[in-house]
Image (cartoon, one colour):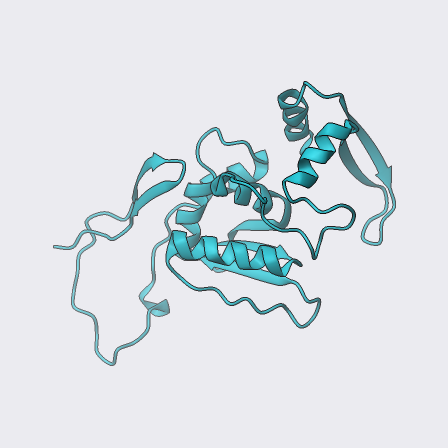
Length: 212
């Protein structure tokens, strides 16, 4: 279902020979599982990936961020396309999560989140499988989606659509902490946030409702 993105990759790297093939096989999770593979056999292409820091062989626990300068916004969008999920919970709370088995990748992503949303995330792996499940919620998830999935970005179409659909949600007083006294009466002047993109790497999100 994501073949169109592989076709884009093939076009972008037209200077080297590559092929796209479909296959169907039985896995531990599903019989007749269908997948699409983009294959690049050019040695120079593979050597460039290794020089950039991509490990050879199994990469789940050893992969790291690129060794040289790169666009964090585009890199982490690709990472989330492959190993992340986004949308709404059953209670209609926006979320964006990343799952990785690499301690180095988890640490780098947590540092990126600190710069973007200003909050610290725990770096402890799950006891069940030893992977890291890093989740961002509510307004933070909305702001991060808008930063990573900017208009006409290169990414999975279904993830781009999901990011665009994460719209503001009304905060219910029932989920706000109680201070022992009723809140002062307020009137909401506007609930739709204003988003102004300064560049791919900076985003201002105004979500505070006006008060009168």
